[in-house]
Image 1 (cartoon, one colour):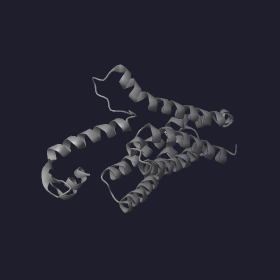
Image 2: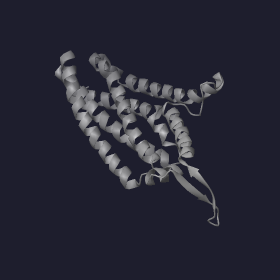
Image 3: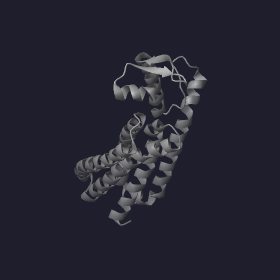
Image 4: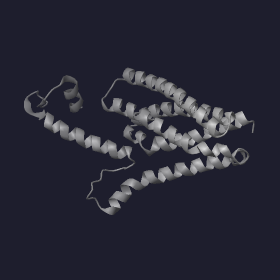
Length: 230
C-alpha cells in the first residue's frame, strides 16, 4: 500500500505516525524498493509454477517441493487433454490431418491466455479500480478478436497448402475461437482468484495454460467434426 502511494504521488519518503498522529519515523524509497523487488521475485516464481520462495542455495528437497505441485497439475491437465483427444479418436482415424495442428492449437491458446492474464495481474498489482480493469478486459477481448482474425487468416493459407481447403477452414475457425476464449479466460481467472484472496499471479503460470490447452482441444475437434460432417 505504501509503495502504491509513493508511486502515485512521486514521493521519496512517507511519514509514519502513531495513534496520536505523532511522528515516529519515516519510510524511504529505499525501503519500498526492497519490498517491490521481493514482491516481483515472488510473482515471477508463482508465474513459473513455483509455489514457495526458494533461492539458488535452497535444499534439493525444498526446491522439488516448491515445483512439484504445479508439475502435477500440469500432468493432470495433459492427461485431460489426452482424454479429449481419445474421445475424438474415430474422427482422427478418418481425418488424420486433424492431428497435424494439435500442437499449434494448444500452444496458441496457452500463449494468448498468459499474455492476457499478465495484463490483468499487472492492473491488480497496481491497485487499479474496477472500472479501469473492466476497460482492460474489454480491450483484451478486442485484442483477441484482432489477433485471432490475423492468425486464423495466416493459418488458413498454411493448412490449405499442406492439405486441403476444408482443413484450412477447420483450423482457422478453431484457432480464431480458441484465441478469443483464451483471451477472455486469461483475463477473468486473475479476477476470480483475487476475489477469493488467492494471489492472481498464479493465473499467469501453468494454471491458465493447462486450462486453455484442454479447452482448445475440445473446440478444435468440435469444429472439425461439424465441418467434416463426422
